[in-house]
Length: 285
Image (tube, rainbow, N blue to C red):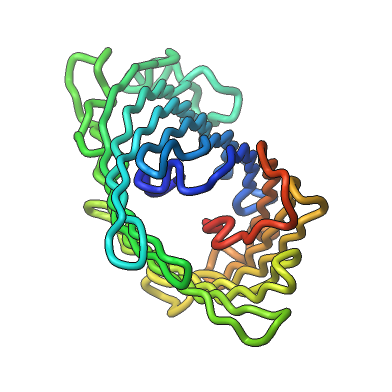
């Protein structure tokens, strides 16, 4: 649901997920993000609702997103087709008063830099299509359709949001009574930026333990692979799931950072039976 609003209401229970990501650990001003995602139980196999709170920071920039999601579902063939719409509010900040900014001769000698904390509020709308069966899924989405102005409080606007497009697909192969293999792919494209492709191979043991590898390519022109990521997840109880990921960077920035890591904790409400199947619990970015 982070990437595709059409996935809202895909479970017969409510799932609450928290995610923390620290990218390029060791670099001052590195990208960091925190997410709270609530995917509410589907209603009558027809309606889905979701909510997410996302914070992202890099350097002196910070954005906080609040998203409300609605999805309408219909039976189609052997699966369920879903069309989702996402309403978003974003608070975007450029903080030129930050102590992390360093100038050789001081700000007073550079009139083009004003020591002010700029802030703007942005509303947006996104769309997503999602189709899922017991064996496979695919979808495409654009979570933020409008190229909103990021410089609303500044006279001369120079910055706008770019549209991001996501195409995703995956399937589940049953190897034997205990082991399953889940290959997945996620294509990410933003206007005027390099594309990204994540290819994931995840093994599942008794639907309780997950481990796999993700290959990311497209972000760097000097390297075929941008990173190799190790993923592991464990379902501690019927309702509690914990996942971790660690990225080994392969581009030139690896000389200055200590890798990237991500932690996910998910809790399911309304599960009163045995272990639930966890299909594609997370696309690790």
